[in-house]
View 1 (cartoon, one colour):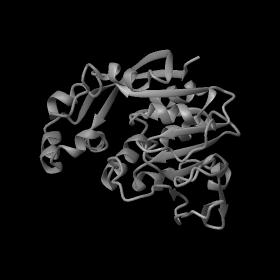
View 2 (cartoon, one colour):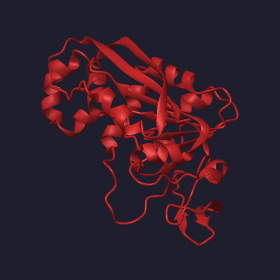
View 3 (tube, rainbow, N blue to C red):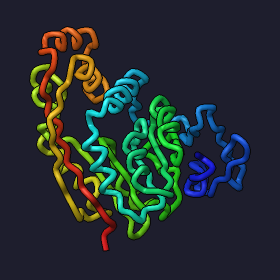
Length: 276
């Protein structure tokens, strides 16, 4: 799918446009980037350490959990937030491409660009949808996208780079941001000692974007899941708590839970547009 999205990409070195020559993306100045055999391309450059990337284990846990449909209502909500006339949808922090793929299902003819700093995630995103191109990129650096190229930009549980989001979004484009609320994964947070979402999360999201965007819509989505031990282990392993917990200790704690646990999923979705 890179051949269908390359016109929206930009060289991370000189910001020039890119063309696909065989299995290499190349700009007019000769900067080249090899396409991996799995179909994605890395547009990370330089020696600077990129932002924190999900490990192979975290990506596998996320893939298993999402494939089981536990967050299906959220995927539907994200897809529903993408306006019908969108032709190019990008996901900054796309992970496995799950939400972008669902959005593209509802937008016949649209193409998608999945951006994530984790090669493990992007390998899976490359095969998440036939109209999706997958790129390794760091949200904290200039995005390898051209100016004013994106109709809808998704940002689901990922860092936010307001200046870059504003640059790549078209003047009438929309930014869809999803964050967990403080009720998310209750009562697992308390029972397993997971990282919790602090009450200032909403304020910090606004502060990261309000220089460039105005919030035009907001909704909260909450639903109950029934999770067995394997699903609990997956939801713990795919999130930020995975960086701070010992897997063996966590498995012992999970084994003490009931065979099926009622768990709350709770998210906030906000729509942003450029300041007028």
